[in-house]
Length: 523
Image (cartoon, rainbow, N blue to C red; front, side, top):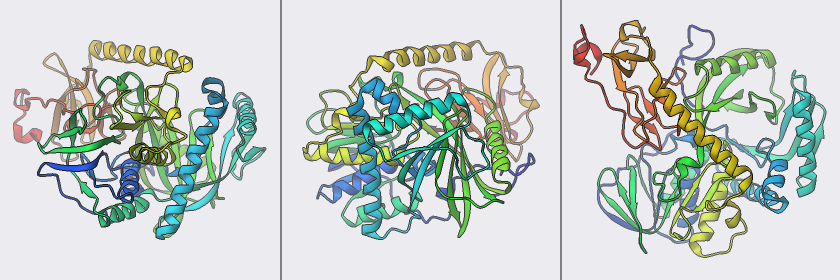
């Protein structure tokens, strides 16, 4: 990758997990089909679900709007752990000790399942057992870690407090969870795809689900036209492609975080690390072309909100330089995650009383374990087996504390962002942009989005998000248009990258711009 003029940072974003991997290619769905189970979304939840269900003898079809493993799973940190930040003390207070223990058990079961699957099929995916640490650099968060350690003891988690970690980071306190893991997620899941197809499972790429019909045998409707009839539908598409009466847009918010894969001057000592303090810093090792490197992740913020996005990459670079000394930044990318009102994923019936339409979403940056746990739960629900975790994860649950408070806060934020966007009067004009630069502009009195590509061609779109009408903002770090309300993301040409929006941003009639022809503008 080429380096940016700002320093070591590469100019382009590219996830390491998607490089040097021979991804299988699958056709688009071209005719109506009928199966036992249709799965919407080919990330870790959808692929693991398909693997489990074909092994039960069911006829399964997986559809993906784009390419397999190109969503959140292809941009993860790929830690497999039940240590999900400072969460267990909070869970004990909000949802009870027994439910906090169940959450730990569900994620531990998921970790063990991945390990057993890797061993059974001899999958070469860089799987390794690692201890996981959460550390504090301030007294405030040191006290929180001590409370979390008490929660570990209360619900029986193997681990405990430590006073140091093997980095040049001045910490106050750390908490270890023993025998967690890391792996290369796409190497693992590509092998599962092969096993699925060997068992007769069907995989379709470039096949977008846009709606469904309910009934004893629900039907998935695709944008391209073909219909899929099934006994069960599994919605594993990150943000629900269909919300029904579940009102998921009001019960989820989208967060972005950033990642650098770096060649460091200092040797990485092993282990998984995450800071309790904000902004978050997450660390693990990764092997790139046979060479050990460090994955530095963090800088979480709500999608479409906050500082100029390139600054997040620069902050991670500065942290890496201080702690490890950087020889080279090999890859950089970002990821988007969905967070529920109570921080527990929504896994189960899309709406209460629809047992044949199931959903999994809201993994809060911990999709490797939570996504696998969702697949294991789905299998049991479809087969009619009792599962200990079904009630824990049910999307119809409601805990007054913190759900009510967070519901009001998040939706007030949406209203605020909607109003803010409508009142915005940008001063930038198209001719002010340099090559490779994008911005919100004013054009003939209207708010528009403009991006001038590296060849100097201008791409102009309407900035009104096609979900509920909020105004998108330019993401310079990833060169996308991001919605601050519900996290929809669009390419610089306006195509949907990530929902809940289904329709692209409207393109502007470039020929209305003085002194520009359609050829000059790239229309």
